[in-house]
Image (cartoon, rainbow, N blue to C red; front, side, top):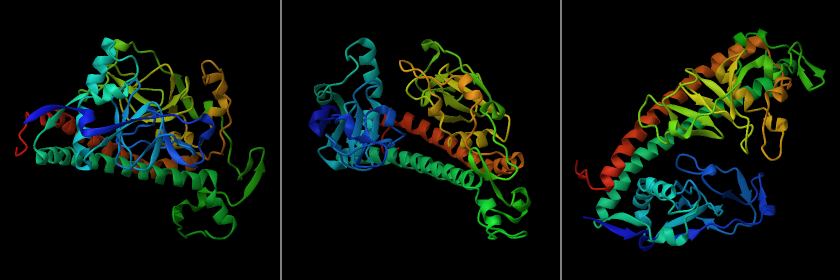
Length: 403
């Protein structure tokens, strides 16, 4: 039987508190500090800032709930961490109910949107709001565990794919760093560690003649002989995106024909419109997220706070990895509204030299990596759609568990 219970009856609510700004750092000193949904990932938040003197600490397994717009987003702490005022901790009184409560809160996320839209909640949810939140509750403990297991199994596979994609991209980045930043193939030839006809890890024998056999001094430091430094405008076609009215933005991908809207630090919604029909690199150029790099892998719309970049050299995937090693934040101007202008970018000398042939070979190397990433993402979308359809039906008792 399904009843309604107060969230405060089944879980302890602990509101976040931000420590002094002087205790923050990006050098991994102290605990990871999460301020709000900007730090959220699919299931677990991603550390960006650390704190040496935290005020509120979450434990592994705690539910993290956003209490500032957008209210109601859920992540799970996968390590001990500090939380700021944008989050609260929902700590189940019985740890065995953690999975069920997590999915109930995910189910109730639209409830907060309705309250915000109607003016019942003014940008913040209080501790009282959370404690008094009515949640559907199954009296049968085994049913609660079963629902958490079914939905959790789907989430575990989605999370596994996400971590696999992170590993695959790290492989592509590691090879890029070896070839284009550390110049490992050239150094291996200079030091006699790589000889013609010989293969080394990441250096097949047939690539030997592509790399020069000496390093020379340039105004940018040591570089392989014969390699050139290129400007931003030599590498990509960059076009600023276009504004999209709110009434054409949907918060969820309700069908596969909707395309993601890119801007800020990632996808900000979905639309029926399509600006691009192939993979592109997105560089955020306005606001606090200036310099953030993303990759769109299909049909998409890019907002006016980002540049859409298509390659002149190499491939889209090459440019994506390349840009992740660049410091675009050095080209931000404006204090009230930070921005990166194309005039600032176009003459920017990229921080390492480029060899056209090696760009092509590197692009060929990483293509199957990004193809696997794409297939994993498609599977994640499919599993997410199953989970999202099951979630309300299981919570409301519309599907019997033995079915």
